Image (cartoon, rainbow, N blue to C red; front, side):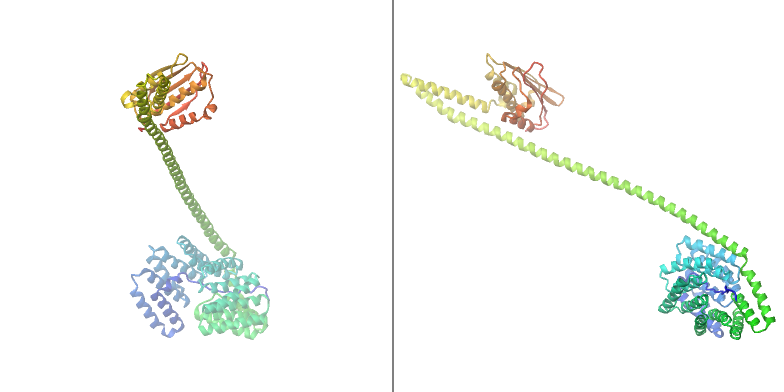
Length: 611
């Protein structure tokens, strides 16, 4: 007996089952199933279907589902020509609705497969797959791949059948399609059995049976049992295989699934031949041929002819054996045509190449879009970062400005407070102590005749002069009455002597200093001149005050022994100068004095701050 027996299994899934979830399309499916099971009442059920169709003429999704079901009904009855009429009408009717039209291309492929026009079937399936891919209809694409696997079963190309069955199962299992993944798991198990992947085949067969039972999909259980029969046939465990095939026949008869009853009986035929139960084999084979004729289904004829030829030969009926052998050889050449397989493989390869090219283009488009989005987001992010940094810098600058203004206000308040305190002290000394000393002096002058009081009078006069000098130093002038230049010139006169000369040049708008700032400048210059007198051992100093643009410039120098900035900063007088200058936003520089001695340049803004 040959090692390879050709078992023809056909399980075409008709895409668009999700269309049948609506009440009218679901009712149509039930009515057509009843028409198949109860042929004597088919007219009644078909009239009901006609009524539903008329009611839904304007509802295109429901109408397309009904037409698909009608074509499927005719195909199951063994009338592919009638099914083709429904398909042709559907392709025209739903031309403007590609998603609905795609179901008719898929069904057209199944019709061609029934007619054994496999290259045409593949063309129709390719068209359906393109439309499914375009609209992301992965479930329906998986059904078509299962149908392609069935075509390869018919061509005995089990390696190709396995590839498509596996791809179909993985997709419907991922989608948790509990109606069809158990059935396709059984188809995958059969392809694995044919390619000697027996462990994996058994696992998928058991999955088909268990989940078919769980989700009430009896067809999955039937095909799963058939797969187990094939697995044990591959192992040459004929009795076990025979039991599984017998169970397929029993379950199919109970559900009136004649097509699967045929497959079960073919399995029994093969097992009986292997067990040399030739009479039983002949009985099963002849019954299969009778059922095939009744349903006009001849997919499995090759296997039946081949097995019957062997059985009749074994029982000595050589004429019948030769007849069936000749029929088997004719069908073998038809199914196993190398050219036929080559055409189909080329068509599928072309589809796969087109799909890969389309997928690549889609990925390139998605990548381009992703890059654009990344660039846009990066630009937005950059703007946000720049905006945040700008706001932070602006806030920081505002805080610094506020802090600086606060410090300046504090300095101004300090200087103003100091000047007010000086005014108060000067007034108190002038009005109080000085007046008292003057009164005492006048009283004692009346006693001049008393020689002992002369010395006291002189001392009191000296005290009065000293109080006047102190008062003058505390509040040296009145800006409103005298003006800045006059007041400062009076100060210079008090410090000049035969051994110390002050050169004073003033070329600026005096009104710039006839305010509180003038007092600050006066105190700074007073401090500089007094430092020269005390520490520099100088004979002269030079003071030049000019204005340019928006600033007043003060240049001070002496011919003394000179000093450094570091030495200046040690003294309290220098700290007083810096504090006062900061209050009026002034600056300090220490240029080199070519004649030796000390030199300092000061500058301050005009009218920027009015104290």
